[in-house]
Image (cartoon, rainbow, N blue to C red; front, side):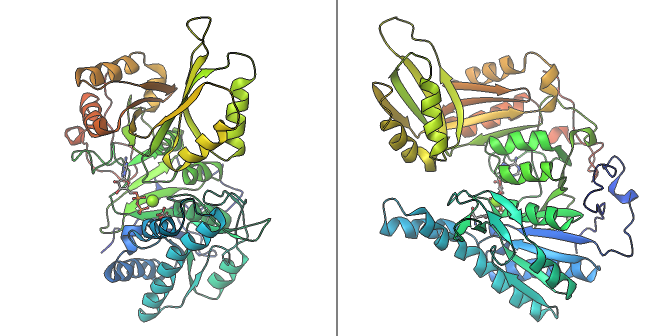
Length: 456
Ligand code: ADP
Ligand code: ASP
Ligand code: MG
């Protein structure tokens, strides 16, 4: 039923010698050490009873190939959204500690149910909460960061020939011993962190699309699946809203040399490997278009024009644990008025940002706009090619889409636009940079021969 893909077995500490310039098929497994795989199943992949059984079947199939299997599961379907809504029904601003107690429930349900399904298939499985699995985090409730994985209990269970199921998205604060959660999409990061701790050969992320595409396939029907994508590009895509992999999971994988493989839960397709840039072989000018409709803009008008003000504003936001994305500020044009400062934050953080800045008394007025969207193009090749930004702006202009903010990195150009124009912008840029299915070359799992080179 599933395409069999073999991976490099990379014991911890030898990662650099084994960088994957060879095809994955060129490596053989050491008979002494059974291969360990971490398989993560997202919300859609465990939504209904049949989905849980399908995931259980896939996990058991890997076990029957002789691998040690740890599976990380997300909450079923819309469970996390439902839990958030439940909290909002009883509180305008739910207490973050209690929010984490509530949200962590969804993943536990999935794990217990999947363990039952695995037992019915004749295998031994044990489900663990994040805390039981040794996922130790800082104390930032609702967006905690993993600081350690104490995987002894997982190792013991694997040694006892169990399949281990770990509730994703959650951990325990090393300081307060409270339950924490890792931010939306955080099960990806749980999976990568466990893969790193166990020295797993691969972290497979099973989801509801066939891999990482040149744009969200829900917006661009002819988006093309990428065979490989570099960590650098995937980081920019995730930071720009391509939620197929959580940003933090990609950072963690890059920092710990974990091979991520994003695949469909529903078929046996080749998926997408996330690899080091020197393994991708090609440098297309533009790899993908990403978008986000989950940010808000905060604007301070009449900002004091003196040294130290920006430091105070963003220092206070950092202290309040608010992530800031784009920032725009200009010197005041007329001498008698202050500057204008605009920045974007996640919509969930809008109120915290407002409250934080209101206490600082640094400007005349603060306003917010949550009808913004962001569209970005990402590609390692644009480092050395002028004219890409100009083309992005021309395409948006030709489609009567007004650009409200611009930010760039060496491999990304992002524009803030009206939220309701985001789908049009994504489609127009995808077409203008010729990223569509027409450009497909033959599917090739190692990704060596798959991406078009696009001229500006
Ligand atoms: P899961 O529940 O499995 O974690 P997510 O909903 O978090 O799944 O992520 C998968 C979704 O990401 C897809 O359904 C797709 O709509 C969206 N997505 C956005 N950008 C991309 C992209 N470039 N490639 C693939 N999927 C994308
Ligand atoms: N259930 C959490 C969410 O919906 C975590 C995850 O799915 O990765 O964000
Ligand atoms: Mg996800």
